Amino acid sequence: MRSRTGIQLRVPEVCRPSAMREGQVNETVQEYIEGIYRLQQEVGRVATNEVAQYMNVSPASASIMLKRLAEMGLVEHTPYRGIILTVEGESLAHQLLRIHRLTERLLTDIIGLPWNDVHDFACKLEHYIAPEIADKIAEALGHPTTCPHGNPIDPTVNDGSWRLSDAEAGTDLLVIKITDERRAFLEYIEELQLVPGAQVEVVCRTPFDGLIQINVDGTPHTIGPEVARYVWVKEPA
Ligand SMILES: [Zn+2]
Image 1: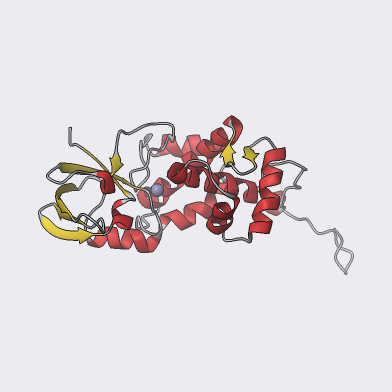
Image 2 (image 1 turned 90 degrees about the horizontal axis):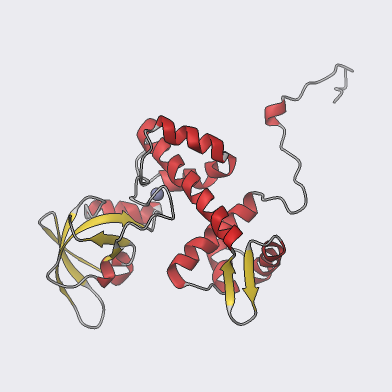
C-alpha cells in the first residue's frame, strides 16, 4: 500500500482480516450452528421460523443461510420435518461451546468479571479463539470441568441433571447448572441465590400454572415454570 506521500505503508499482518474462501466456516456460520444446537437441546428438530426468531433475522434470511449450511454438510433440512445438525454440524457445535465455556471461565477466573456478564463477551470472543488456544486456556485454568454457570466444558458430558420444572414436591436437590445465561436471567437467579451448588427443597407445586414453591438454602421463594425450566438440579450425592 502506498500513501499519498509515496511512502510504503506497512499494514501489520495481525490486523488484516483473513480472506474468506467459499464454504469456509465464518462467524455467521458459527453463530447459526451454535444457535441451532441450543434450540435442538430445547425442542429437538427445529423449524426455520424458530431459527429466524432465535438469530433475530427474517425467515427469508434464515432460509438462505440454512440452505448454505446444508450445502456445507452441517445441517440436514427435510421439508415439513425441520432442521437437524449433521454429525459434522454437531461436532462443530461441541467445539464452539467448549471454546465459549472456557472463555467464560477465563473472564471470571482470571479477568475477574461477574458471572452474569461473561456470556455476551464470550459470544463475541469465541470466534477468534482457535481450538489450540482453547487447549492452552484449559491448561492455564487447571482444566475446569464446567463454565461459571455449571455447564460442562465438554458438551458431550452428561451430568445427570434434570430441569427444576420437572422436580417432584418434597425432594431435596442440588443446583447443577443454569442454561439461560442472559444477564437479566442470571441477575434474577443470583437474587434468589439459586446458583450452582445451592441446596433447594421443592416444597409444593400448584396444579395449573406450574408455580413452584422452593426453599433455597432455607429461604422460601415461589418461582414460575419459565424460570424453573432453565435451572437444572440433581439429588445430592
Ligand atoms: Zn456459561
